Image 1 (cartoon, helix red, strand yellow):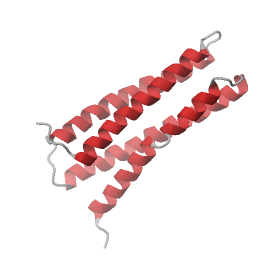
Image 2 (tube, one colour; image 1 turned 60 degrees about the vertical axis):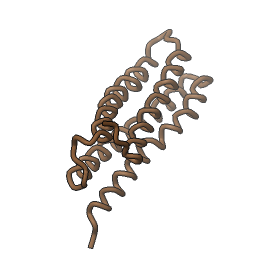
Image 3 (spheres, helix red, strand yellow; image 1 turned 135 degrees about the horizontal axis):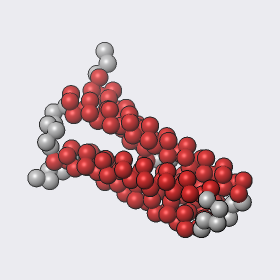
Image 4 (cartoon, helix red, strand yellow; image 1 turned 90 degrees about the vertical axis):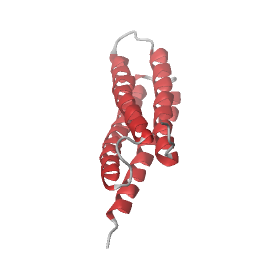
Length: 146
């Protein structure tokens, strides 16, 4: 007999790992982009977009499994760590849409300062990792904030 709650916890943790792990690959890609020619840069941007897409879809699974866990679990929606996690999630969704996609689109603009765009992507990657780490900490520690 499957314990559905435990199975959903497993899916939730797995999707969290898939949401965070690939971000660290982006640092290697950004480092290579600094010295890449146009052909290689196009390939690196395609990889970057694929990683962002993987993170986004994993985030969908993370949200759905999180909703199910709150619904089936012992915590009410008003629990402080749940409210804070939802708030950070809203910020991260907005940030993911603005921090990566719009910057990646600018690489095709002739004469654009590529190094500034790469620096912006580097910073955006760290900001997103920080947001995800804060959400992860809230879910693991489950602090009483109010």
